[in-house]
Image: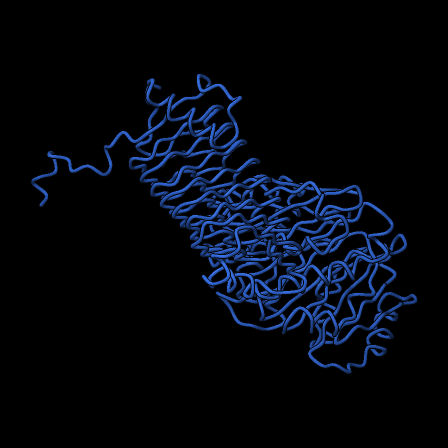
Length: 228
Length: 298
């Protein structure tokens, strides 16, 4: 196991080691301590490895992650797992704004609450939040699933494309073009699998509601043909 | 971008090291704003019928003794004072009423930057570490304190444009964000008698709160009204005689995090400023919700 104590070495050294394939390919287990809210920890990993980040982290932790399984034993600042491509990022605490923004793939699990704009413009990532999400979550979300086991704040799914949203608790309000849709068997199966991956199998999928796009904003409307 | 911090003591161990802890917090926020920095600290309250005035000079070796003598004559009683850098704090036997006009008439080169029973404000251009050293902030004790480090976006980089801004007796404000309707609000508030010294947007927020308080609002009412009348992005921390309040705008883009233990409550733009406090790792820690007022009182 490689251990980085960020009181002894800086974040640049950690990320440089992670980006050095000679080191990263041969080390499957990593641990980072004394994080103290520092920014950009474990960004841009492109290897299959296990990373434990023991402590609270600042902006953009685990951004652009590819293949790695990263666990943060603490709270996260803004932009955790931003633009993730694959792998898993698991946050034991709360996440700040725009968790999982623009992420293309992989799984982001937040065991606490996520604040505003969780999953903004998500492009294929699956996000499971055990607690609540803040306002404007899944804004312009294009692909993937956002699962909220608690409540959702105002304007959920505003200007949504094809991402699927599952919320167990209350939704303060839906954003423009976001509507409730029926929970069919295929959706329950999908949700069950996501909860299983998030280690939340004890939560009953029957308690969730599904939300998606009404598709009135982004589809061409034949009534407007005269305008072109 | 700017960095703001606030620390509210719930124990003697924090009070006796308040300046030291706040300094560490503010230095952690240096990258969020290198232009100027400032601190408001609530120290020992004055005796009844006395007022504490913090006065700023553009010169480092000002004749503060002369001002003390003049104030003593003006108030017809003894005046105590303490010098820190290019600022001095006077404890005068009377109220703040009329002292701004008196100061500008008798010492036009000085500026009153705070008044009340316990508040003191210190601010200057440069990095937080320089400002903290200049005023020897680490040695200060007190019940609570706020700090700000500025990255100027909409007005000049001067000491007068620096935060915290006084909003009235024992009140001050620090701001991370920008206001878009400050010019119109400033005109309206000037008609109501609020005096502005700069074209800074945050000073308008401070003046707005001062105006609401003068009209009879309490702090929570003034902040609730601000959500409707201030257009822009903001995280505010407002210092009061007994505590402080935190509020974010309804969009809540500007960061803020709050943490609490048995010994302290603290807020900061980023968690790393809280990490320097004792017991931070296990503190109850959360992000303040949009358009919600959080306040603590002794």
